[in-house]
Length: 154
Image (cartoon, rainbow, N blue to C red; front, top):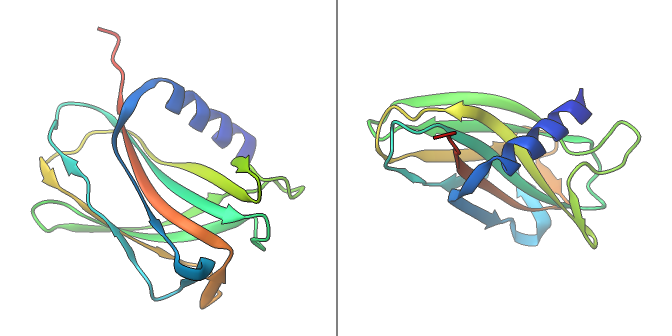
């Protein structure tokens, strides 16, 4: 299952244009407090297009788990908020990392929404908080959001 998700993520990324939005937040001292929410604010202009929405996550090779749970609040331009809980696998059952390695760092691109149509133009606000049991989650260095416009076959 994890392998299928990873392969699907690669396929989806390879079929898209350059990102409409890509931003990451650095996690101070590689320690993410359970109370800390990172806020990312993409502006969506085209409500007719389809988009793929990803979370980006960078961890060290010393991160102690195979996954990370995220609590995500998405606020639309009109103020309506949707809340999600997402399980993000970042290692295979045998302990190998799923994401790309750059030395000690592991870069993960986690598909959140595929072929999403934003129903309002304007600024969206994503608040991302970890949902792990650790009050201070160690060995996570960055968290972010990437939005790609899906290529059409026109």
